[in-house]
Length: 224
Image (tube, rainbow, N blue to C red; front, side, top):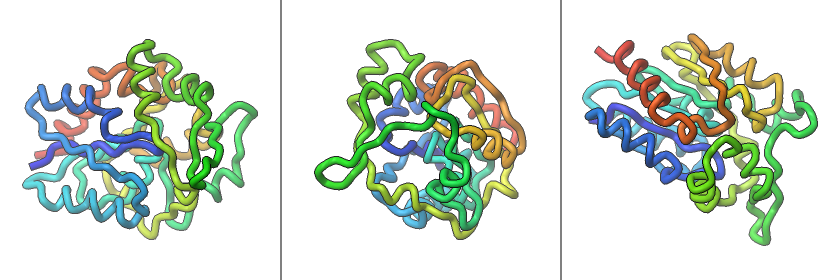
């Protein structure tokens, strides 16, 4: 049985969420943090839905940042928790909606192609925007775990969505500058309810116990 599935963001990996996962496990919840690196959206959705189908009760699915794209397509979840997430509708893609709403100067992450054609984050920009309110040891470790992404992540486009008929909450960080405005407003309106916290992009590192509380509340409200 899996109680909670945590889906990592782009450039991130499961190890970023180890503290949050351990806190949830300490509360006797079973947690899976699948690695979706370099999988297509369809492959990611299928991988997560296999975990959902293998559970005796519907789990809560948590999506952080780009992990929200997959979370919003997973069928069979009891509830969805979006942490500063992207939430796409059918036929939307990050590239398409960023073209429509490029945001203000200084918003979004600076990513440059490396020798292999993958996108690497600018270190100073990533430190400030992803982990700006995180203490130095934790931020240093989080920076070390970042990995390059293929440019195709911006072309991900759902053929179906589950967020329309699954209870959900959008946790929005007031200090988050990684998602171009006004997209967070659009994404938040797609959820059942919204909470706004005084955090930047990584509340699971800044306030891990509070995020664990939020996930546990969602589970208690929507799992029989």
